[in-house]
Length: 243
Image (cartoon, rainbow, N blue to C red; front, side, top):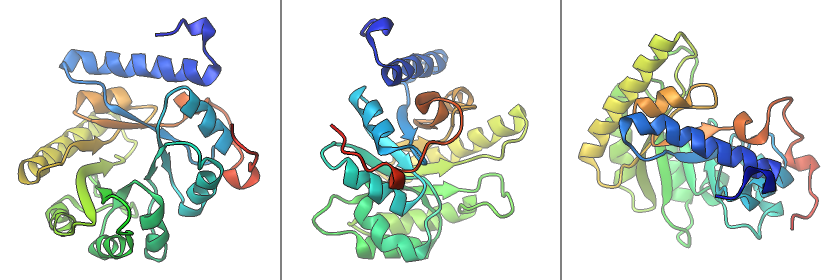
């Protein structure tokens, strides 16, 4: 590991976060979770700076914003995840743009993504988003509908079922811990039924330690990587060439 004083600021933040993730995982004796850098509203240059420090996986909320950034970063070997709600009329573009979609929550979306995934690309990695708290107005499938969605994904060779994703209600710590634990039980049941289910995406900047304690294999971090403060300009306003 390089000395901290020799690193760029993005590299220092990335190194510090990896240390924190390892520390959070250590009491349970599990491997550190995969780190997904939440790059929504960040510039293409900010993504490039973090990629230069070694980060490869980035999460976006909007299809067009991601496509614009990809056009700037087309010389980078990056892994792109859609973590925001996906409208059906964006399914074609999403199936052609992303390596992973973490927000699958209805059968019609599964069918549309499979139909539009180009045969020239690897199967599209999918996570089923679960509304684990039954929160009104929140996107995500009810826990009792996960099995049906999983069956539909697993039945299509253009798709690859990888696991589950959730954003629990920001309630008190006990309620959030219970939601993470319920997600782990649901994930364990899914992994017992399907080969290749290996990803439980939960936990963000403010609660990743608790999520890791409850079994998260992927955490989604934004501000701790890109820095606090107002959201950066979107990629649409940052089209400078990236080295």
